[in-house]
Image (cartoon, rainbow, N blue to C red; front, side, top):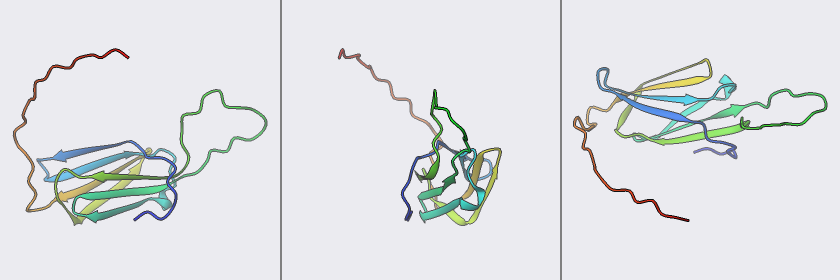
Amino acid sequence: MISRTVGFEPNADVFIDEEHATVVVTVEIAGADAESLRVEMNDEYHLVISGRRPRSGHSGAGSFVQKEIAFGDFAKRIRLPVAVECQSAGATYGDGVLVITLGLSQAAYHPTARTEIRMIIRRTQV
């Protein structure tokens, strides 16, 4: 469980690599302090990534014209689509991207066929 106050939630992609029987989680955390990064499994379906991105060193007088980059503590909780085994987990962090690889559980079920759902979407006026 994350004990500190969370400042923002980074973007993440989750991909099932059927060829290598792994789940690959990619998290966008450019500028994060590598020493602060933590990856935890709450159970075989829930992954929590946390860390800290230090504030940039703006010095002198001035003001922001546009401010979109979040700094401080962050956390991302991801519900994985299949059960994974923690023993085979690995992670790399480079170029601002954290990549976590988790082996699929032997008992994991993942669909091999996709179902297309057709529906009509009506636009409502506000």
